[in-house]
Image (cartoon, rainbow, N blue to C red; front, side):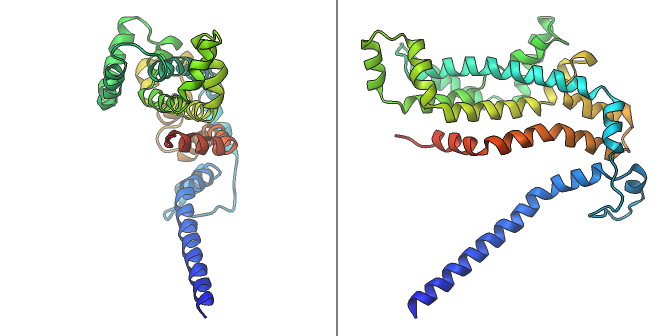
Amino acid sequence: MEPKSLQKRDILRKTLTYGFLTVWGIFVLFPFYWMVLTSVKSYGSYNAEYIPQLYTLHPTLQNYLDAFSAVPLLDYFVNTVIFTLATTALMLMVTVLAAFGFSRLQFKGRDLAFTAFLALMMIPTELVVITNFVTITNMDLRNTFAGLVLPSVTSVFYIYLLRENFSQIPNELYYAAKVDGTSDLKYLFKVMIPICRPTIVTVTILKVIECWNSYIWPRLITDDQAYFLVSNGIQEIRENGFGRENIPAMMAAVVVISVPLIVLFLCFRKRIMAGVSRGGVKG
């Protein structure tokens, strides 16, 4: 009798768990569904809905054509790809080298310097943006890719995350490599990076997503269309392309911009989870 009771309790627990996850999943995915649904509604039918409808009987792709014809969205895509690749590559170089120095190299005041470095995370983002804007303006780098990229080539959090991963590698490997005459850089690229690859892949993907979604900084530092990113394109469609009323065209542009990130996450979701979980495990 007791095993049957435990079995029923287990079935009830699983039912409640999966039921809660299903409801939560609907809440999470509903904004994406609404975005896609709005993007395939015609301008007239959308404005005629006094009560928002959860479906449409006459979907259209005209909004997608309008999104690309209203502004040079394809050019903004190219600019965003260049900005994302350049920023991510430079950030990885800086972050990996900094994490290696803080985790493996021995120098006077290392721990104190790292503590002070972590204190930078307490500085408000708005203050950093203002400082970066003044610096880039004084260097005459507005409306340039250098001005877009340089303020984003480092991250205190990513350095901390990689430093914790590098610190988990036994010191004996480093000492053995030094006995064999291996340089620090060779040890970094041949031993530490391959071991911590899941975390590095996670950092890379998160940085790509961050750059792709960048909005405030590109809006501040660029007023030349030649350097606009996709985030600028969305705002331009709203302000100059159709006005504030053509929501379906805006949603079509948002769908097009979101697809690369969704595909990227779906392809690398296991590595992202593995990297994040590895970053929180000691030993």
